[in-house]
Image 1 (cartoon, rainbow, N blue to C red):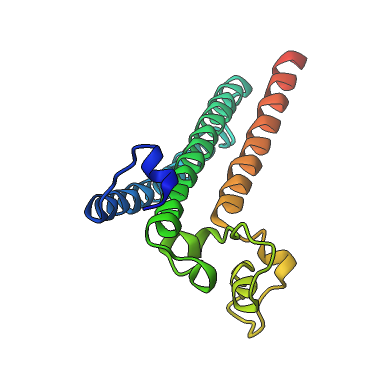
Image 2: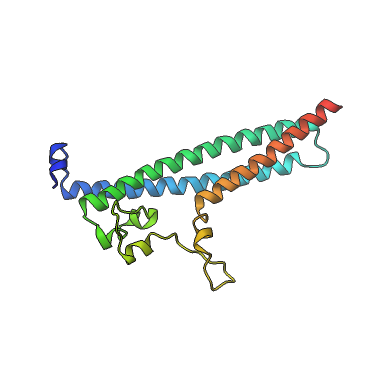
Length: 189
């Protein structure tokens, strides 16, 4: 135990740390699962709403109301997504803290922990070994038809968070445009 930990009164024993790490992994997994469950339910709800208000015989007042509801739903769920993202990142940082400060995964073992491998946050060192520097690079996915992975500059944008942001932002723009169009049509009648 370091002097800093002794001074702060932090006297976690290895079993307490192990139990906390298990809880951190479980909570992190629950938060990640909930964001995809919410996104799936959102797509289903928006599909149902779109089918109902984009039918030929629907009035512009109904379209305005439905698109207003969709805008509200989109914004609400995007806020939930952003909050979930903040929570699971905070939880992950605790996991990273345990991996480095209690389990001593340092130097070339820096990215060996569950959370360190996912979040790829560099150590606070000026000089990194070649192995460690390579492990900090973003994962490089590939399209199913390509043997070559995406470039590193594009790969850093390929993430679940980016995909969900595009889903909510794109849908929000569509519903807002429909809402404004509906209001203009109502006012012009």
